[in-house]
Length: 445
Image (tube, rainbow, N blue to C red; front, side, top):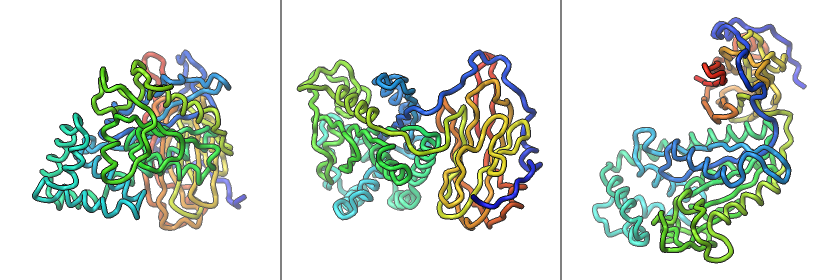
């Protein structure tokens, strides 16, 4: 145990809190449940947040919100990877990102081929390796052809500038923080990915198993755009997109067949219209949906709970940092109660995971009891207590029913010891309010 002195709540963070309130009209007093299984979904290329949400909801229909054999609750969470169209770029960015990720996963095998791809998109002629990819994908070539034209319209300088600061790294950091949050909350974790999402999932899986071991985290791959597998996979024989990657690398062997007639999705690649399609007739023992359900069921039946002292809450705050040292999470509740290592239990929540050696996580969880949850503003801060000079801390705030609300990174500066407990670095605020319907809502900024 660290030798720290308990400090009184501080005016620094209290000054930004709203007047406290208690829930009086909430019809449901139990806001969330503890434990259970989280199914995290990693979306494919070109998916907006809305599309990723719809895909996650379609996935949830396979097993619903309860795993029947054990009665455990299942929650579903989006591990979103940003598409270019959401921050002013284009679909070209997503395609380039996929090739970069594949090259990173298969350094020796793909690096030279990736350079050929760069030559293809910046050359003056279309008689190149990219054209060969287009020629293999049949009906889907029109879409990829549009991406090709879009890339060509960019200058090489602009592409190079983008390549130096890809959004991939930001997404990896967000996914790692979410993994830490679920594991800290004592949740079993099953990761499911479609298409390019498999490249993001592989990175998250490596991180999660380094923290909790392979027993606490399982992976399910759908149409993997990577030859790297960490669990069972489904890949249709008529998936034109993934099969097109075979000319510039490797992907797993096809293991399920679909009919070429009567398909809504001519690419054979879409999650909902191909891989989760209930009406596709099986050619063999299973159709793609049946195989995905079987693989997900296998993962749900074998995943084990991680070792953790934490639990889930109406909202949670997870702190991690990028190295050794002791960085502390501080939460000021609307009542003015200061929750941190020396006063772990508040009136509305508690610091249920404390880390003093490095990397985190630290974890604050707000109560699932609506009669104890205070309305108003919760102020979140961090303090470099010792040994973490120059580190970067990441704070992620998530709600029970809406998933990640905010992920923010800050430098922690010099170590400040117990004096720093009196003025932690402000990072974010969380607002809990009651809507006219009586429903509680969480926002963060």
